[in-house]
Image 1 (cartoon, rainbow, N blue to C red):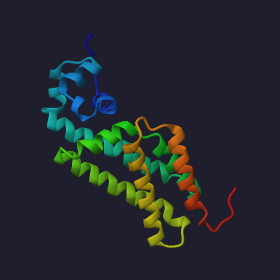
Image 2: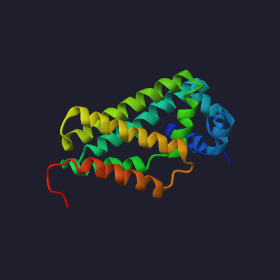
Image 3: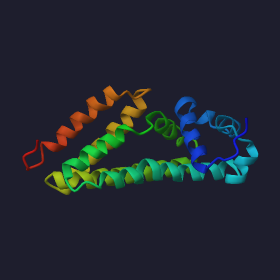
Amino acid sequence: MVRLVVTRADYFEAATKILATEGAGGLKIVALCASIKVTSGSFYGYFGSFDGFVAEFLAWWEEAQTLRLVELSNAPDDPVERIRTMKTLAGSLPHEAEAAIRSWAHTHPIVAVAQKRVDQRRLEALTDIVRPVVADAAEASRLGLMGITLLIGLQQWRTPVTQKDFDMLFDEYEEIILVRYPVTRT
């Protein structure tokens, strides 16, 4: 059965699933189209080429998995709640797809540029969220770097990333940050 209506987001979500299960090597036009039950003509109509698709997919990934999470994390007024929100949202990332994108970045220059940009934006965002809780900017930078390194390390080390492992690491990381907060917490 061929689908009559498909969106760019349908392609991107399908690509995320393929990356999570098969890695970048499995992300091919035929497999992508088959997974959402469309013809390759639909694909070319939207993206023009595989490179066009990759560029749009990476922009979508950055928006959905970084910029949107940062925006949601910054919504609460309370700095402790911001940290907890960021932790919860980071736990919901498609970790296996993220690991596949990082691996893909070693062989695809466009992916490498996007990966570096996402890493930098995530580091800046986490540092900004930690900053109101710690004594100074240098400490916030170190704690931001620690958090990003924990996330990347967990994604690269464990497939699948279990909620248990994520919680074990990031509950401890949260506590490392919050013991620096001068206000009494509940």
